[in-house]
Amino acid sequence: MADAAVASAAETLEQIQARHRKEAKDLQGRMTSKKKNATKKTRKGINDECAEMERLMKERHAEEVLRVNGEGDKDQEQEEREQEESADDVAEKLSAVSLTTPQSNTMAPATGATNSQTPGKKRNRQKERLARRAAEQEAAAIAAEQEAATMTDHRGVERKQMQGTFEKHGLREHEIRPDGHCLFSAVADQLAQVDVPLDTGSGDGSKEAPYKTVRRRAAGYIEAHGDVYAGFLEEDLGSYVAKMRDTAEWGGQLELLALANVYGVEIHVVQDRDTEVIQPSDDGHDKQEGDKKRIWLAYYRHGYGLGEHYNSLRKVA
Image (cartoon, rainbow, N blue to C red; front, side, top):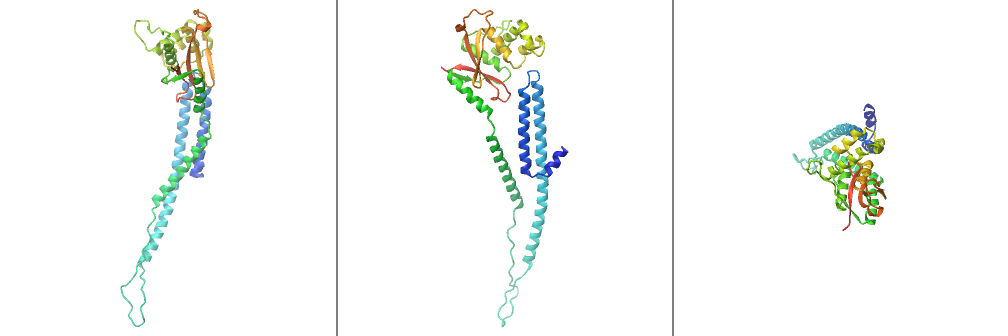
């Protein structure tokens, strides 16, 4: 922090703002890399670490700008006060000077006829300072917009690429709430579109939310086929199954594989320009390849603030 203070003292406000933008861009790149390489087990810790890094950077930036603005204003105000005092002194002296107009030699000089020099209107120093500061902020905003214009809009590119696939297959997007249950909610919505029952009985005769049913059945399948799935897990099977069944833990590839088998459907996942097809195994399903029902999901990596997200893709009526 001391080094940053020394550096900021030697920089102008524009130089500091330019450095801040570069540091923010570099930090964003580091955070993106960390999040990209995160696993389900480490995702929360990495998100917390990134949030703390961003908070500390913003606090440091605010302190540096405040320090420079404070010192600059102090020096400028002192200089302006001295200028104003000097101008006031001159104006006061001029106002005290009486200028007499000489008459002809035969006439007595006029008495009491004096002209006072009226000083000019004082400058509004505070208004000028505010105007300069506003101009600096506007210039910084323009520079930031120009820099942003040169950066890749990953969210826009992703949506544009996926929209082409939607149109090709006659699909329209049905928004799913980004609440941690999105994969299971999207699958539940799709199963309803193709008339595949969810088995909504929770075991005690009561009803449960569709996404909970899908969660429960995915977790149950993984637990029942632990010999297949355990090798892909970074924790013991029992803990993983309980977390996936009872919490808002994000679902992923393993859950999609399980659900394809639970419901005997092909799951088509649209991502960027590609479409991944997840086929159910033949165990427990006697349907021929062409008889299997298809459900469609949209998978986003950049389109939502919380990160990865699934939406349901319904057929255009």
